[in-house]
Length: 239
Image 1 (cartoon, helix red, strand yellow):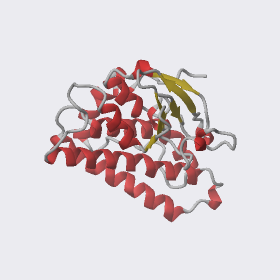
Image 2 (tube, rainbow, N blue to C red):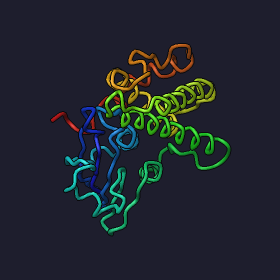
Image 3 (cartoon, rainbow, N blue to C red):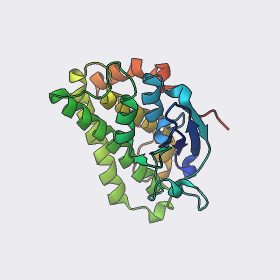
Image 4 (cartoon, rainbow, N blue to C red):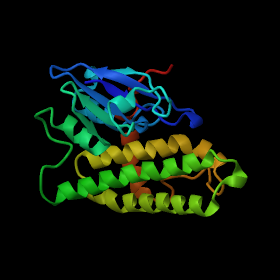
């Protein structure tokens, strides 16, 4: 496998990457920047949790550049994308995470059946939504303040707050670490990292906003997980 990774959005100091993954079946993977050191782990976290990280050899790229080879792999030119040596590709984080989760015989990060599977998938989808919504705020913050759409920013931010509140309600039901919790940690770490900068650039967004304030269960759950090497170790070394 080869790992294509967007480390994030250049305008807010993130970088991108492309890489190779060494495996008997020789597949290639493209992973989204939210999962790297600047944007905390998701796909790499899944790989590490299942002893696949040693198969990843990152190589730099930026999906927004005109000369990126990414569209030759995925016609949408988007990350994450997993390219198999057969020429077939897999796209989208949830698909790739579950693929990685299928490469071992230990307990799965994706519950196989029952109500817990649907709860876990919903939580993973919600975590991705938290990341995606905040990225919309980032993109809007690139505009000069007088050109930013205040109503749009506030609508996006209200969704961020609503998701945080839902996570607070979900925490008591969390069981063993699964893909839903892993994606949630990654999204929260991404917000923690970027909010101080983005909040200064985006109108009406508090750069000092505390994601866990008023959410004691979320704070208690997140604190030990955020310290785990799994969620701190970079997939790419700083350039």
